[in-house]
Every structure is written in structure tokens, then in C-alpha cells.
Image (cartoon, rainbow, N blue to C red; front, side, top):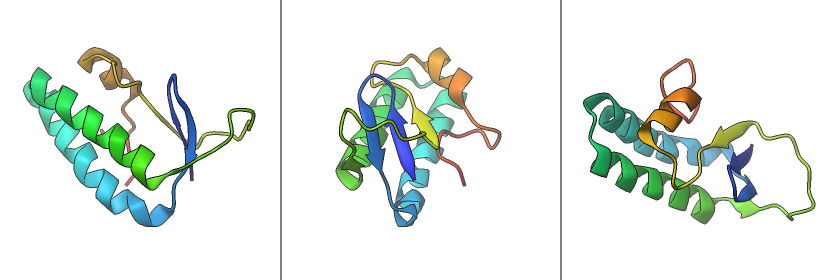
Length: 93
């Protein structure tokens, strides 16, 4: 799956990594629902760091369609709420 981190670029992620990413996504959602700003910030950083760690960066000149778009590292809680999928999280599943 091709994942875009807004403001950074794209990475290719194997589907096998989504279970691990979903744990962080669930944590992020719980922090958003409770209004835990510091926890939200920490978990958003951890989620994006994990995507960067597990993913293979695509060249800057590659124009692949992104199947998943994640917010930038400095996104606010309100901005991330606007990006949530139907299941409530950023990561499908």
C-alpha cells in the first residue's frame, strides 16, 4: 500500500504492518476522544515514526496514487479529526 504523510512524501508499506499500526491508531483515537492533547501528540509522532521505519520511501519524483493519507507531524487534534475514516481511525481495519 502506498501511504502519504502530508508534507513529507510517500512510502510503500506491506499489508503485514497494518496490525502494528492499528494499535497506535486505536491509541490515538482514544486520546482524541478523551481530549488528551499531550498523549495525542506523542502517539501521532509514534505512528508517523513507525510508518517511516517500516515503509520504503518512494522517490520524490514518483507520482503514485496514495491509498492512505496521514496528517503531518504538526497537525492539531482538530485537523486529525477531519481526516478520520469511517471506522474512526486513520489506518484502515
